[in-house]
Length: 329
Ligand code: UDP
Ligand code: MG
Image (cartoon, rainbow, N blue to C red; front, side, top):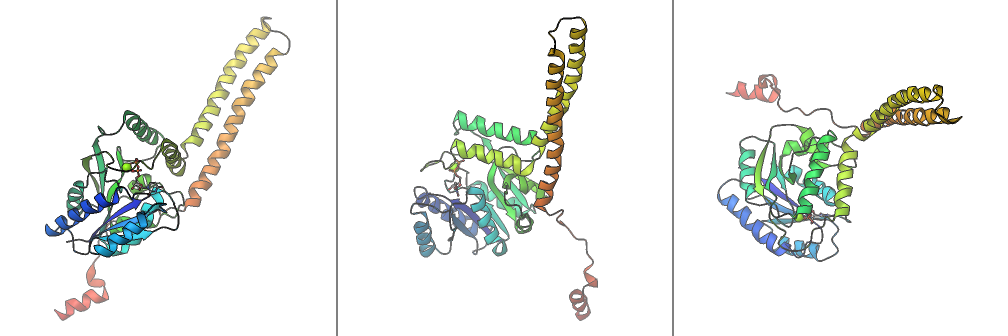
């Protein structure tokens, strides 16, 4: 049996908490009864600087049902990703695995059973993936899918249709803790940690109360953040574009000279047209090359961990402790 923590970021969620806590308490006790998780397992609400009664409610739930609920309060609103990270990093040393989910329970909590099963089978990361988006509006669905396509075009390894509903084992969380970057885009980082991973499918429900805390503006900022914090492809695009325009300018130069010598131009046109194209292309190319170096500095400055050791085939008999055990047998 393993201790599993549920980590739930909350921002102005007073409307959903009564229902959410009810359903989660049922879920936790069912899992405990089935013997899948220990009695030490908990749901932890991370209050992300809410302006409503969210924190008072979390305190009340903790006081009345301490066997299920805990709370973490952030000093101010830091955004969903940071709230989630704060929660995961806080519980990391108290559990064998943590599952992150949204307070509105749009992610079907019945998938938790399958996640825990996969974890008990030995998987370190279990991604919750939406099998259907029937309940999302057409707009949300198409923007979200455009987002996943764009991310993969930019060379960022994200799991398609996976948001932040996932289980991570303790050692995967330890790995995550070693990413020191300030702009942390969890969906892009978690696949980079490695270890054995699998997916669990679920249907995404509608928000049962309250409003989405992710308006279009935040969604676009989030996509931008995801791309620029993980990829230097945009810089590469500038370099390629500069190179392309410079090549075109050479062709154009031939054309300009033909026009010039066949007498189809007014005086001065050839030199101006040629320099506009060539200088334009060269400038873009130069900016791209400088950008390439800035990109290198950028990636270096993140000082990402280079590896995590998944397994150590190690002969115990050489350890002092183990050999004394053998001797005592
Ligand atoms: N959230 C948060 N801080 C924020 C915005 C949102 O902790 O600044 C939480 C919110 O309480 C919810 C989760 O992030 O638990 C997802 O937000 P929401 O359901 O509004 O997003 P959507 O499902 O519409 O994408
Ligand atoms: Mg939601």
